[in-house]
Length: 381
Image (cartoon, rainbow, N blue to C red; front, top):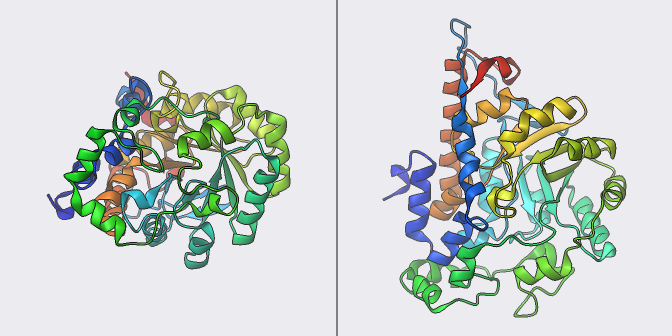
């Protein structure tokens, strides 16, 4: 199977599975507990049908949107995700370049493997910096200052990860940073020697966003311990309000799910929220972003920009979210599998397919621009 054989999300997933050692593939692919929410994220779209309009003169389709003051050529963006150079040696460099080629936004994670400064210097498309709330308030301030110096416009605080989810696939393989693999996990690496060769012949793995502030090297602090020991489960709305005020620019909360919390986010001056259950990787049994979208847009859509992520595999999924009032839709595994399969070329092929699907679907819906979509286009089973 080659990149040219990949025509949809599932093809890219299969190619990534062929190329990655099992523990790394399962780290991307897996969710928490019984993975009920992981499956629901995509299945939720199936309960909603599109109702097309005809004869609307849709030869030209404009996909551009403005989100938190950032102008995007596409209504989809590449969500911040961790550890990308484990999946392919290009890592976030591929993600940023592909996003720039398609004129959209990308996120850089606190657990990213390329520095936000390097990416900000090299690429002109908007980027957001995604970070976590630490017990050490000075560390939080230092990380925001670092982002300011890099020229980052939008801060995105993840609020659904005050403790790590129970990801049993990782427990079975021993996946951790640094690696503490089980025997079965080690065997999975042994049968994918090309990945190992690639890994050792490229730049040494690091976490530059955190390395400046925390010793993440060696055995001193695994990613799991980072979540359990350094992040602050006592974080409150007052803490976040202070951070948003200190930042002074567009501030976004990722992981909001309830309308009440969305109102609180608007009250403290957030420019945007992302309805997200962390790709089904945190609280299993939680609602999907798509299922909550209408309720939240009705509550705060006139006060801040509402986005959603989770389970997006098709252009029609994006149209359904936009029809309910999402300003833009975040992609996660949708671009991580192509990254793992083929680096920048993989992500660009996936984005080209997503763009083509959205344009085709907009024409079939009789919509010339995103603003033409609305709840009237939808019916629920």
